[in-house]
Amino acid sequence: MKKKDKILVKICVGTSCFVQGGADLLLYNDFLNPELLSKFEFEGCSCLGACKKVGGATGEEASAPFVMVNGKLHGNMNPEKLNKLLMEEV
Amino acid sequence: MNDIFIDVDYSQVYKHGQKIGGDVFLLSRNPERNQIVAILSDGLGSGVKANVLASLTAHMAHNLSFSPMDLTHSAKIIMDTLPVCKERKISYSTFSIADIRYDNSVEKIVVNFLEYDNPSALFFKGVKNIPWTGDTIDLQREGAFKKELLHRQTFNLEVGDRLLMFSDGVTQSGLGLTMPLGWRISGVNKFIERILENNSEISSKELTKAIVNKALSLDGLASRDDITCSCIYVRRPRRTLIVTGPPFSKESDCILGEKIKKFSGKKIVSGGTTALIVSRLFDKKLKVDLSCWSSDVPPASKMEGIDLVTEGMLTLSKVATHLEAKTPVYELPNDPVKKFIEILEDSDQVHFIVGTKINEAHQDPNIPVEIGIRRTIIGRLRKALEDNYLKETSQEYL
Image (cartoon, rainbow over all chains, first blue to last red):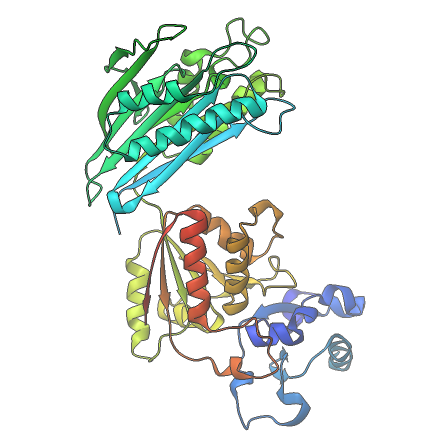
């Protein structure tokens, strides 16, 4: 599969995402289904700005850490949820 | 901040099997009186006894240098005071004293140099060794067991000059082992010249380390005497700029950009939002480097024109903690904190530009207390840099 065919996954490494679970997400090589690793391209990014949007997204989704998959923002992420999310995305 | 920096450092290896050294190097900077005193003393024998003799000598020489007394008279007092060795029935220790005084702008640096029985110190102008021209004084002390000759010289230091002092462990290394008469001062001289030809801006720390390591290897990696080497080097200061926090108002962003552009030296940007601002101002892409992080601190980023881009508060507070504890760099994991500290250790003057805008994302009560107030952390950093690492620091708010 060529690089450009891969789906881009951006993991926020801003301070507040990092301390609230973003650090675990950066170990994606360890917890993700190996089949998924080849289909996605992972990169770190600085603050996506989602943490500052008061009154934007609400509920569970509205807290750190944030991950952006294929341009769509997902909040309150953890390794299991990310695995599930990426499975659905494929 | 001054445009000239006097870099003094030393390197030392004890005699093989000893836990305490018979060579003592003492350095004190007295900025109020514009004076630096560096003393190297070698006590008779090795181990505890030698250490007592050398420490006594060094501390006496140190205190007397700060007094208005003539250095020659001080030397007499030192020798009269030293305790007598039980076996050899003599009291003996060698010393070199470099009493450096400078004016307020550090343009004119005068050294009063005094040497007793240490291997002759070496004076380098650039890569060239300059022979000594000073005078010799015979102390003619009563009860002396040998002729006591003091070498004395007063000279000026300019940018690029080096003064190197050794203990006899350096010049006698390899004696009868790899070389019949040891390394000798001529060998040391050649070695230093070769290093300076390859790297004329080598720091005192690295130069003395190279000399001591060479001496140790000549001794077959089991030093047969304490090996000590110290260097006084006058050079232009190495500067580092640390930018942290976004400016209070958007209009100040351009001022920040100008300041970063104008600065000559290493540049560190610490803070995600700050990095975004800088990347927008300079129109340079910001790329997160996922190969360099640890569970304590988020990854560093890369940006053209900036030496290091890191996350803000977590990284800074970790850096402050390690600087306060004087953690050796090699003990740190490969993360942005290590790179940060490496840059700081390698610089003489550190300037902080602190943005005062409040970060809304840090107001969340779920966030650990480690994320303190930026100004407090900068205060800790500056104090640790000044007290533990003898760096000059300054800061401004934006």
